[in-house]
Length: 125
Image (cartoon, rainbow, N blue to C red; front, side):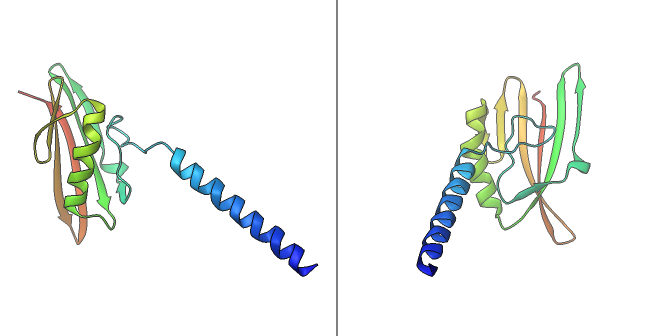
């Protein structure tokens, strides 16, 4: 009887783990709240209270800030260098991208020991 219960329990654990793996593979990426087409990298946490966005006749100005948890500046830059072209952004230089009259820039800051990444979108001049 014990052997039967152990086999059923083991099969249950395997099924649950397989379902979790499929759910993770099929989950869509999370995006910044005001930068709807800029993905939020795993290992970063958006500080939504610092997000801003407004429209001007020349174009939108938007800014989001995220805490960097266990990711480096280089990993962030590499991630966005790979991810942003999928959303139509072309690389201008490290941390700068261009799309349809807009400039996206990535900045890094340290606030009281917290590593932050700030992403801004503004009209290109």
